[in-house]
Amino acid sequence: MIIHAMNTPLQGVAPLTHTGLIRAQGADAAKFLHGQLTTDFSLLGLSEARLAGFCNAKGRLQASFIGFKRSHTDMDASAEFVVYGLAGPAVAEATQAIADENGQVWRKADLNGISIVHLYPADGVPRALWVAPVGTPAPAGAPLTAEQWAWGEVRSGIATVTHPIFEAFVPQMLNYESVGGVNFKKGCYPGQEVVARSQFRGTLKRRAYLAHADVELKAGEELFAPDDASQPCGLVVQAALAPEGGFDAIVSMQISAFEAGGVRALAADGPLLKLEAAPYPLLADV
Image (cartoon, rainbow, N blue to C red; front, side, top):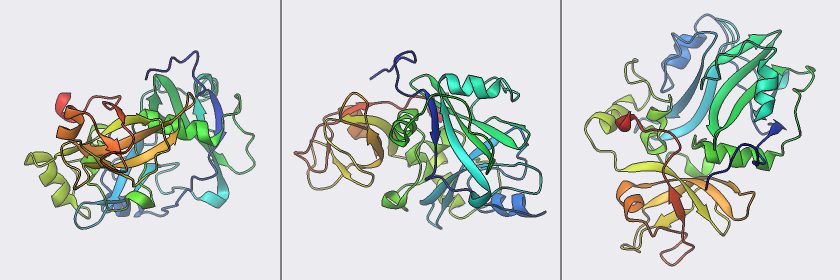
């Protein structure tokens, strides 16, 4: 399913009231985060952002974040800042006033207390996070609903870890190593040995893909391959109502099941999924 930018409903500005901000403050903030998360925060520049995961000791993701610095000693908090999602022309309109870093993913620009983080696009539509102190006028653009933004998040293929998939995946099962979410050269963090082993010993058997179904899908629901009804071959990671009907989702499943096709949701005789590869190259393919 390809949605062309000129026709997509993913254009405008969405208030992301469901998104929280966590402050890590002080001289050791970056060092602390560096030792806890899957990506490099010690060398994070002011023009960059990071996708990061927090894992348990077995390398299973408990949470995910987009982290950035507003200064070299401070990151910021929910009660003091507002977050908007920008999509389509709203990104270009906002970045005309703020130094645009060529639209590169995970690049960040700042001006007068406003930060813009460029995200992965959805079906070719540019997207960004707009973060500013409470009381700052909202960014310009047509209204975009939370449901439309959620759909764009799914179509970008960048999964957010939520409670239904708590400790269900190592980062590579969500393709995190291919989208800047894992740094294999940094020092230790919880679960680091398991994550590294999955990458370098060829033990990874699951990947994240995009899916569509004619019925509602929810995070945490099981998927089944046609040749084995006894156990699931994967899980729904994240789902959203599709503008043209049905639900789109990010799913994580056995590579062999994706290649064979015929995967169904909920049960072996459940609704058939239309599957497609992630919308970015995987690390092994680069």
